[in-house]
Length: 68
Image (cartoon, rainbow, N blue to C red; front, side, top):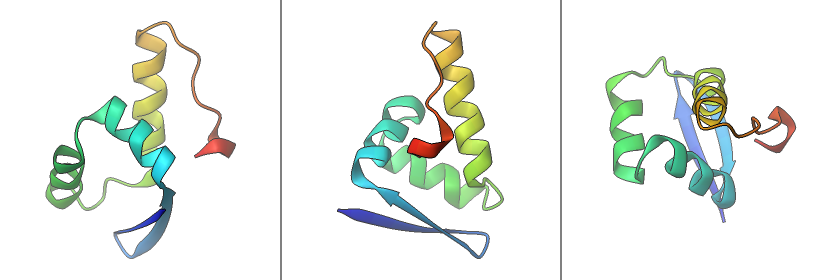
């Protein structure tokens, strides 16, 4: 399954597996959708940066950008 998000007129295509990873780092689908609605300028790079920061805080290695 592929999920399409439109964030500030940029189309972001996210595979279901990646969405599951995002939800694990940023909360449930409802929370993620609410954050995107509240701050439409929240772009893909910001999501990736937050994921990397959260992984580093937990002592994990960041997800390479090529996999997102």
